[in-house]
Length: 302
Image (cartoon, rainbow, N blue to C red):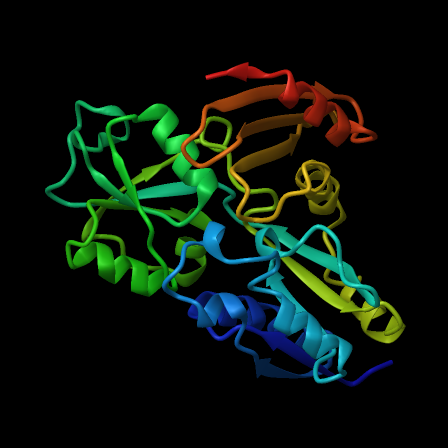
């Protein structure tokens, strides 16, 4: 059994939280763990929104290259950033617990209007670089303006506080994990069954080389099978649409106490396009994603 693991991670505060969380879990198993920070294409290109950056995996490719070259033993990703197909020689060896999967709307105080949906004032400027978030927000509030915003979580909150935006959209998981001080803002939690999150939002993915069986066995001790059963459905829907994290697609899967699966999905052809939504339930996750895609293609325009 290995006694030391080198984790590859991006250098943002949230990525480092994720890597350090994993490091702590591995150290509890008696391992020595080292972090190696790797800058990705998505970190380097800050002037473009995600849908304008070419290719897929712009937050993961350099980490995957480090795995393949033997610089690191495992990479920790935000699972929603991870392409649905791993490069040859790499595997998804495990997933973490799921944090809050929802999106939060963060409004600068003084720019709210409690009489309006989501308390956004008429014509509010909302910052997000996610095509999914843009499409769903504009579907509900056609009067607002969406404006691209890049940078890590603290940077985006600073831009909001400085008055560059009236509100921004962020993942709840990042806010909670970083324990951000949101007292200067109004926080509107969005129901994931209505404002549907990205596939696997709130989950960490542990990636390794396929041939590194020793590391894969270790990661199995961190693996949450029940989370994987649900996120596999969400990511399979994304894969069947041949999309990446820039696709305007939200998919959220829950499992109830009796074991039945329930899926909510929302998809547009473009960030400013009409939304199709479905809710679908089944007793098993076998071919569930395929049925969701079929239903979504025939879904109701909202």
